Image (tube, rainbow, N blue to C red; front, side, top):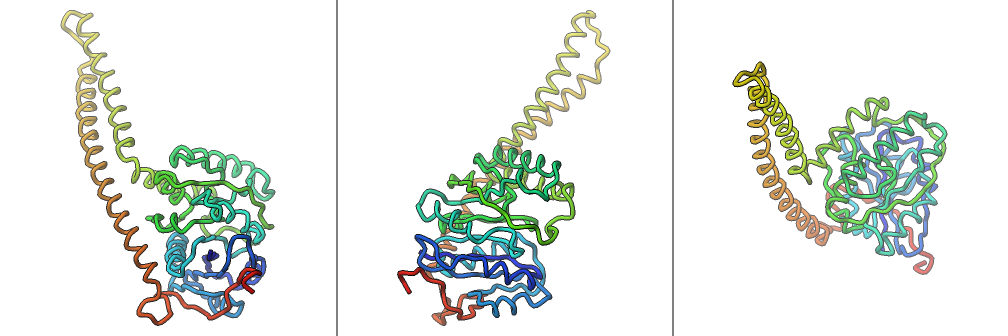
Length: 340
């Protein structure tokens, strides 16, 4: 069994050394371990430093394309490199390398498709009380949207089976953490939490400037991801509100009309209520169209899944021993003790 540890990087030359040094060289149930760096347009020589430190593979973007794009580029490369399990971790050494074996274990045992390292945010000292509350609230919302029991949805420390990796598609440029959990849950994959500890904070997050900024950007991501898998529920809920609102205004008009013997002073209620009911019918039709579009999207995802699987099986294009878009350094693979 082969494990690929992927590390998205943006100007991480100084922190990459401790992060790589902390990675485990042997894990029970894993025969080979390789490290993949995704250099997201770094300008400080991160790729060169990674090669010096002995990483096995490098994917480099000439300009910054965002964390979500870097994550998916790593997933695609790791699958084509033959990974049976993929671990995603941060380059700033936030997560402890010794915990990799713990989050990999459920995947190796066949008990999980996606394992998320639960940072137990209530115990993190540098998290403010407001941030801790928002973390709990946000994870609670995501549990409802994804139909999973995820406890730390923003955690980027996760292990992914090959089966799950082939089915994940990120459609936003902000973050992969939320969308992939919703996808995994709604596609019927098994999502498991494993408690982990974190190292002391080394720098501020580069993904967002503040908690309000994160909420502003993460909210639409969650809504869009949920809407892709449950469009009918969203539009029918809106239609139901319009029907109830319009019906209440219509009843108001009719009741006063009957009480006052053919006169009602709520003509505006009748007009607004009728408009709301008509709009509800239109939204209901949109729900049907959205469900048809979602069905087409699922068929396209199934087609893309098969293409990715075939591409991964073909592996090395042209037989030259080089994966397209991936620079292999030639560093020796870390192997289990029994392999020598």
